Image (cartoon, rainbow, N blue to C red; front, top):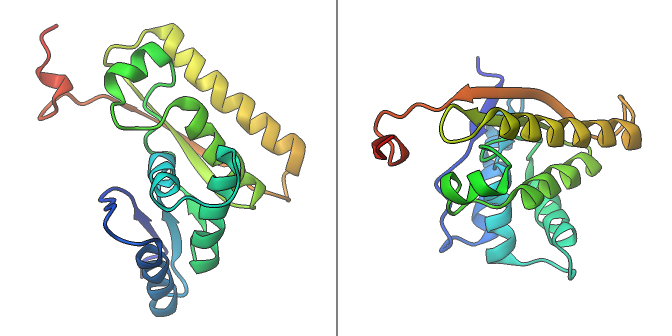
Length: 178
C-alpha cells in the first residue's frame, strides 16, 4: 500500500554507480506505483566525486549523475543535508557535507531536469536568527528562479520546506558543553 520510498544515507564509495542505478530499477520494476524520492544533495555530490561525469564545472557533472539516476527511476530529491547554509555555522555542524553552493547546484540541476525537490533547515543549535533568515532566503530565491525559468507546469521546483529542531540527544554536537 505504500506510495513513496525515501532513501538517504549509507553511501558506499566501494559500490559502482551501476549498483545504485540497478537498485532504482529493481524498485521500479517490483513496485511501479511507488514514487522514488532519494539521494540528498550531499549524496549526489559524493556520487560526483566518486564517479565523475563529463564537464569541467560542477553543474555539468551533477547533471550527468542525475541523468543516470533519473533514467533508472529516480523521480525526486529530498532536501536532506541542508542544515544551515551560513558558512561559519556549516563549517562547524556540516562536517563531511557539501557547502551551500553545491547543495543549491544539485537542486537547480534537478529542477532543470524536471524533478521536484524538498528543502530542509535544521535549527536550534549554534546558529542565530540571521542564519535562519539567510538560509530561508537562499531557498526562496532558488525557488523564485525555478518558477521564473520553468513556470509552474514545466520543470521542477521545491514542493516542500521542512524545518526541524536540532535534537541533541545521542549526537556529538549535543555533547558539546554550552
